[in-house]
Image (cartoon, rainbow, N blue to C red; front, side, top):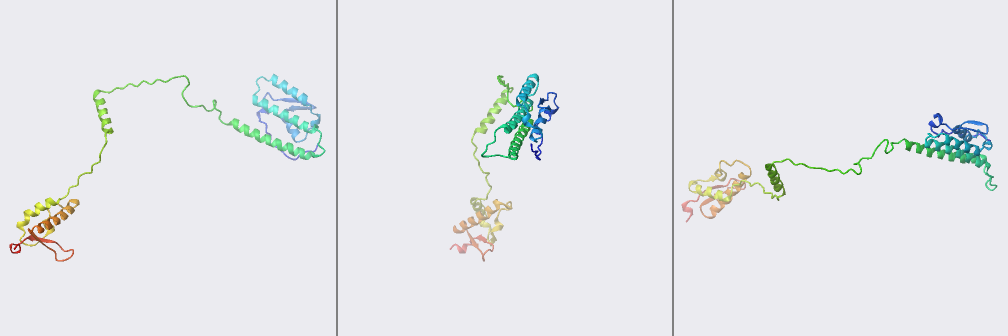
Length: 264
């Protein structure tokens, strides 16, 4: 048989060789581990035509029957090896189709392809088996089945604490209306009263800002005092009680008590 230059990595696990339960075969002049026989057959270094598949099958069944403590995955490995040996020999013994007339090289390449695909499947299965297993490496979370859990709640509170808690709950459940904080302003009525009291004391022209209350310094109340005093002065002028004047735009507004000669 023509040798092949292709090399393959050994797909079979190392424990298949090192374990004491290794499958040693003795067929057609070959004696040794089954995985070595399969490797030689793949490399076309052994004559498969002289290999007795029946004798190999009998030895496998005897091995499984005697090795009671053998691991199931290891027995499956040996079964796959023996099946591949039987498949390789069957390919050699089957009659060649005259129409196709495949060469030994093409057959070897096809067998090598299937062997590589099998190696990939076995490697994927090995990696899956090395992952954490449910029930041994990791476990489900949850309560034990058939064990009802009874919870008994004991309250320890005084009558005052109960009433206080009820009052807090009632306050939280009541609707709340937002009311803005009232702003302190100087109203027009306040300005009318202040200017009305000063009407008889203004014989000369006086700046309106000088008539503002001294305690008002700034903020909203100061601006309201200015606008209210101006509006009140206009109202007193309409009533004929005071006089207003302004020399120009943006100049101070002055006021005084209306003179007697001006009322006629």
